[in-house]
Structure formats: structure tokens, C-alpha cells
Amino acid sequence: MLEVLGFEFFRNALLAGVLASIACGIIGTYVVVRRMVSVSGGISHAAFGGVGLGYYLGIDPLLGATVFTVATALGMGALEIRARQQMDTIIGAVWAAGMALGILFVYLTPGFAPDLFSYLFGNILLVPRGDILLMAVLVVIIVAIVGLFYLEFQAVTFDPDYARVMNLPVERLSLLLLVLVALTVVMLIRVVGIILVIALLTIPAAISRLCTGRLWSMMLLATGLGALFTLIGIGLSYVLNVPSGATIILVSTAAYAAALGIRGGRSVRLWRDTQKSE
Image (cartoon, rainbow, N blue to C red; front, side):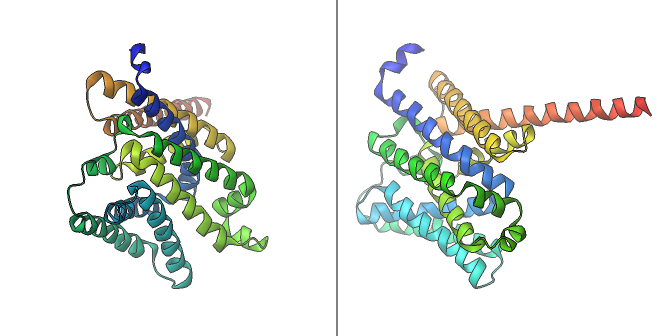
């Protein structure tokens, strides 16, 4: 197994997994705590429009997805805040329109899109060096912004009304948080694909929330879990010769089920102990 580390593609996969885990650990915590999972789903599927636009313009599809997804996230936030539209309706429209635009742009692009399915379902074993550099830049941006606005994001995430009383710019912070979600989604596309992004963005953070209530400790634990799930998924996909993105998600889901089982068992034992003491 260790001899595979001599291959550049495998080292690139491990590095991409670690970078994606940092982003999903930090931003996934905000997504889970603020209950933005459906918003993330809309943003992730809209990213396919950016991939198609990238193919159509002849630029890196991941770069096209970055620009398109950030613009979509800002548009969703503006529509909810300014136009007073229901977020569920906005998510449905963006979800469908993004996928439709992606299909349309790919159809209009001359030739054949050889690695289109890698954006839909992910293939971390085929991440090129250029994409890793882009992922590293996005991680630096995400960590820097979260570090700069950590307390403000914490206030907006846990209690927006209190944040308004404290005269914090809640609307601008919410839009900035959506932009960070968009950047994280773009990073995860190469790891698990557009279809499966939501799982890796939320499952590590959901497990860490079962273990701790502090925001910073949730981020650290979610980052570690994300890296662990990704590394195990890559190893299993290599050994079993199965798709890497699906394997990573199934490993994450199994861990979440185990965590829920352990928590449920503890609750039952606590209830029994309480009944006995009464």
C-alpha cells in the first residue's frame, strides 16, 4: 500500500483531501449550526453552470465554477434580504437553473467534454497540480476571513437578533458567509463532485456538533474528521478499485450513523440511571 505514495497522482489526492477538509471543517460548522444545508445544496448544483461556462469560454472549468458560484451565492442572499423572497423558492430556482445552464453551455461547446463526470461525481485521484494550487489559495482566503471575523460570524450564526442589537452588519456578514460557502463548495467539487458535496460539507461538522458545543472546537474536530474520512475513502477506493467520491461519502455516512448510535446508547443509559435513582 505504501508504494502507492511514490505516485504523484496519489500524493496530489492526499493533499487535495487535506485542503478540502480544512475548508469543509470550518465552513461546514457554520452551515450546520446555522441550518444552511439546503442553501449549500442550491449553491453546489448551481456550480455546474459555472463548470459549463468554463468549458464554453475555454477556461479552467473550476475557475469558471468559482466565479459563477460566488456570484450565485451573492444573488441568493440579495434576493432573500432585499427582495424579501422565500429562501426555499430561491434555492429551487437556482438549483434547477444552474444545472440547466451547465447542460446548455456544455452542449454549445464544440467538441467533447472528456472529464465532465469528474465534476458531477468527483475523482480526487485525478486532481491536477493546477487545481491543488487553486484549492490552496481558496483555503488561505477562507482561513484569513474567518480568522478576521470569527467573533462577528459567531454572533450572526448563533443569534442574528443579538448581533443586530450589537450594531453588527448582519446582512453583509451573512452575504460574506454565503461567499465562503460557495468557495468551499468549489473546493469539494474535485473531491466528491457536485452531486455529493452536501454530504462532506455537513457530515463531519454534524458529528463534531454531537461531541462539543464550542464553535472553534467543532471546527477543529470537523477538520480532523473530514481529513480522516477522505484519507480512508481514498485508500479504500484505490484498494477496491471503486469511485473515490462515493467511497468517501459512504465512509462519512457510516461514521455519522455510528456516532448517532453511540449518542443514542448513552441517552438510553442515562434515562435508565435516572429511573433507578427515582
